[in-house]
Image (tube, rainbow, N blue to C red):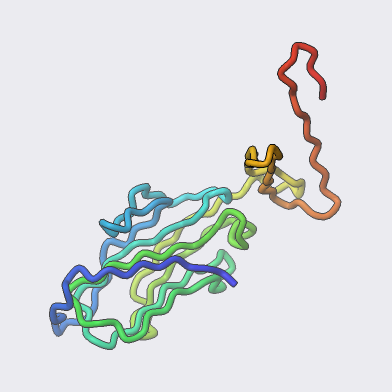
Length: 185
């Protein structure tokens, strides 16, 4: 099951919404957010498969009570990969939304290409923004995307490998360099 981090902040202190209906503004994508300011702080439109998460941030203005909002992360094939659903929103002059799509180490990393984030109000698409998730060149061979080596408290160590196209037959050769002049591998 996919997890979606979602933050909802009321900017209008539940002030009555105008009669014109809800408008979505400031739709932005990026790799980092400031939750206190409800802002993308590292804006981007192209992400590598080793990116931890892709964030979307936007403001819904003039929200009447009872509005329904849905954020869909749409794959290059047009399938909905993950969603965040809000039912019965409170009346407000402005609500800020932040949602995240996990990429590195998650199923999204295996689907490079042009993605879209789509926001719907009461079942009707209201805003959409395309973005790219770029993988390594796909020649069919496995690739190591990231290595995370850690010394553990008990004197042991841990090595975590994030790989592309690895399977049960994939092998990784490791060499450890010793600190003495006669290096052994």
